[in-house]
Length: 452
Image (cartoon, rainbow, N blue to C red; front, top):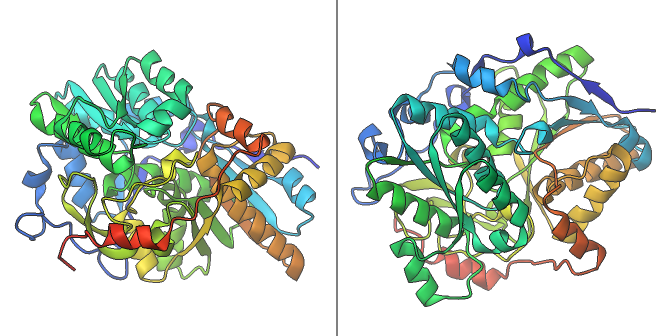
């Protein structure tokens, strides 16, 4: 029996993003200024972001209109298909019905352009000529390079060093779209030079790369900073994924019992899950919502819910989030997009309130699941996405054991075509499973800011 794709027409594409802050039973804790320990205002963010994005970061409006120019570019790959994975269901021998939202159809190969295009457009409206950013596995850097190319904005990407070396084709994608990509830490910034002096062999981290991108943006009047995850406006832009999915499930006459997404900073999980969370919060749906992370970077499952900096050099405002500590340097796992010390405040808030679940897996078991999925469905997913595949597989096998025909849905956030080096190492038996030592977690958490 073949897998079934559920498509929307272009005219059915959502024209608004969904803001979960409007429906939270308890408001999120404020973002705090590190100097005054008072809630930040728009003026505190103005050196880094255009006012259009600052307004979205702080709005409590339930729905935010998508600009026509952004919709026009979205049409290059949106709406993306929702796929009933009948072949995989058969291979697993499960009575569960499994669906995945395939975001690998975008030009950059992942969900990231959903916010990259929006952020570039809002910067363009305010005359911004140049944007800096960081990237882990390179999916975000590729997406922002694509978006800046569309709007004739210069783009500089600080790519985590281990991923810069592991994933050369992603940095070549950035270069193809006109961006400059350099390994982080670098000698381009004071933060990078200091870290290289302290630890010249460091694999780097997203926290370090953020410090470099923020430092350069803050030092130049013609430059703003762009973030691919964590912040509220990023989560907002990604909700087009889940909003499309709701329409597609309605067309299929079905609805998920379990919603799954991998998490690093939280954007693809939030984009898929938050519209379903609205049904849970407002309409009383009893859907289980599961965030899946690597055991090598166990932010939700081992971190603390505290105020912390978003970067290593302590230049960002303080965010209330699950964190492993801003000094945390994760192991060089291949799911580079999940190697971040903190979790989006909105995702963290939902987890702290007991509204979502969290699971963590090792690399090898995720690659194993990804290959089973690829052999049934054809798609070779990114190492990040393989975590969601693993969780979906285990839920499907649990349904098999219990004889339950539940509906499982996950966000297939990107393809793995530029991650073949990681698959090569898996086939050679060279993938190492890192379980981050409790002592190292404790050491990183000991340096949290003294505010609770």
